[in-house]
Amino acid sequence: MTSVGARHPVRIIGVGNLFRGDDAAGLLAARRLKALVGDRADVIEAELAGLDVLDLMAEASAVILIDAARSGQPAGTIHRLNASAGPISADLFPHSTHVLNAVDAIEIGRTLGLLPPRVIVYGVEVGDTTAGNDLSPAVAEVLDQVVERVVHELEGLSCTSGS
Amino acid sequence: MSESKETKTRTIAVDLIARVEGEGALRVTVKDGVVQDVELRIFEPPRFFEAFLVGRHYDEVPDIVARICGICPVAYQMSAVHALEQIFAVSVEGALRDLRRMIYCGEWIESHTLHVYMLHAPDFLGYASAIAMAKDHPEIVTRGLRLKKAGNALMTLLGGRSVHPVSVKVGGFSRVPLRRELEGLKEELLWARDAAVETVRWVAGFDYPDFAQDYTFVALRPPDEYPFNEGPILSSGGVKISAVEFEHHFREEQAPYSTALQCRLNGASYLVGPLARLNLNHDHLSPLGKLALADTRLSLPLCNPFHAIVARSVEILYAIEETLRIIDRYEPPPSPSVPVTVRAGTGMACTEAPRGILYHRYRVDGDGLIREAKIVPPTSQNQRRIEEDLRAYLPSVLDLSNEQAAMGCEKVIRCYDPCISCATHFLKLDIQRDR
Image 1 (cartoon, rainbow over the protein chains, first blue to last red):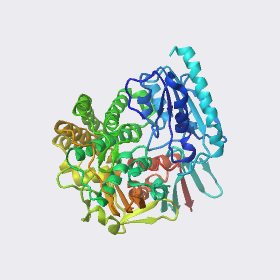
Image 2: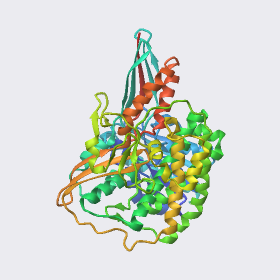
Image 3: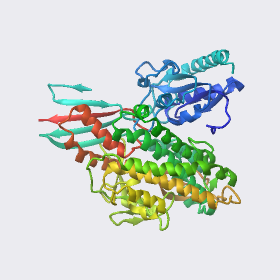
Image 4: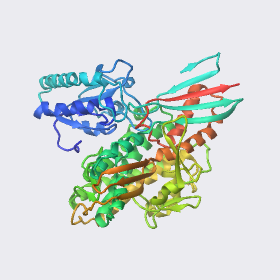
C-alpha cells in the first residue's frame, strides 16, 4: 500500500489477508489488475485495511473496492454493490469488535460526506479461510472473472467520468 | 437468536468478531441462578504463524509476523526484531532506537484511536455502531478520524505504508526519514496533541458502571520512560523479571474448549494492556499527561475495566507528545541499520503492543533459519481475566433478555479490545440454564 499523496482520481482497492485462504481474494485480484490497467487507475493492495480505506479513497472521483464477502451463498459467488446508490448491506461482510471492515468505512464516509462520487464494491464469497491455506478451487476459479469485470467497470467509468 | 422452551437452553448469536476467519463463542452455564462455567473460545492466528515461520530466513520474519494482525503489525515486528537481535548480540541505540519508539507511537495512536472513537465510545453513548454515532456526532467522529490519521502518517513515513509496514528490519530500518520529513508532521501533531487532551476530557465524562475488580497488573517497567520496546516485566504482585525468564513464570495452558492457549502468571490470571501499563508507569507520563489524567478525577490504580478507554486516551496523548519530543531531538543516524552477524542461538523479547505485552521467542540456526518460534499475544494473556470479569458481571444481567445479556457481555469483552478479530467470525453467547 502506498501513502496517500497525489493520486490518480480513479482507484482500485483490494483488501484481504494473504495468509488466510479465500480472504486473500480481493488482494490477489488487485495484484492481477496492476498489470492490466496501466495508467487508467491507481491499483492499491490494501492488505488488512479497514477504516484506512477512507484515507485511500480521499479525493478520488471513482473507487472500485474488492474484498472477501461472507453472506452464506456458495463460495465463488461474485457480489457487485453500487455504494453510490445508497447504503450497502453490511450483512455480506463479517463484523468485528476489533476492526471496522471496508464496508463500515464506506458507510462512515457516507455519513460524514466523505465518499467519492462513484464507489463500486465487489465482494467475492469465501469458502475456506483457514490460516495458511491457498484459495479454494471455487474462489480461484472466479478470480479472473472478478478481474475481467473490474476492467470492464473501469472502461464504463472512463466513459462517464472522462478520466 | 433461538429459544427452546423444552430444554430451557437459550442461544444468542452475536455478530461480534472479525474478518472472515473461524468462530468465537462464549458459553455460560447457570445452575439455580448461579453462574457455573464461563468459557470464552477463540482461535488464535499466532499458532499457525509459529509453525509457518519454521524454516524461514530470519530477515523474512518481520514481514511475515506483520500479517498476524492488521491493527498491530508494528508490535509483532518489534517483538520479533528485538528477540532476533538478542541472538545476534545487536544493539539498536540512539536515533534508530528513537525511531522504533516513534513507529510504535504511530501504531498506538492508530489502534487506540480506532478503539476509543469507533468501537468503544458507542457503547457509552448508547449507539449500536460508529456509523450510528457519526449521524448524531459527526464532529466527534471526524476528530477521531483525523487523530487516527496522525498515527497513519507516522506509520507511512517510518514504515513505508500505513498498513503492514515494510521498513522494519533486524538491526534497524531499511530507510530512515529525513529531518524535514519529520518536521513536516509537526503541525498536524500539534493539533493532535490538543485533540488528544480533548479526548481524555471527553471520555472522562462518560457514565461508567461500578465494576472494580481485583487485578494483578503486568506491564513493562523501564526505569525512566513509558514503555514501548524495552524494560523488565513487572507485576503489581511483585514479580520483576526479564523477557528471558518469561516462560519460567508465565505458563500457557490449553483450555479444553478453545484452540487458544490461556496464559497464567504463577498459576493465576493477570491483566495486560493500557490499564496495567498506566497503573505501573503513570509516573513516566509527561506533565501534560499527568495533568490530563488528574483532571479525570479518577484515582489510581484504575481497577475498573471500563476505564480502559480513559487509559487508552491518556496513552494516545503520551504517544503524540513522545513523537514531538523525538522529532525535536532527531538527527538522522549515519546508517538506517546496524550490521548483523548471524549466529545460532535462542532469543526472547517482550514489547508493549497496544493491547499489552507481546512475547516472542525464536531459535535460529547458524544459517539464520528459524528452527522454532513461540508467540504469546496479549489477548491470550488476558483471556482468563476476561472470563473472570464476565463471571463477576453476569449475575447483574441474568434477569435480562438474552439480547440484553449478550450486549452486556459484549461490552465487558470490548473493554479489552481483544485481538480475536484476526481469528473469529461470530461470537455466539450460549447461556445454559439448568433449573
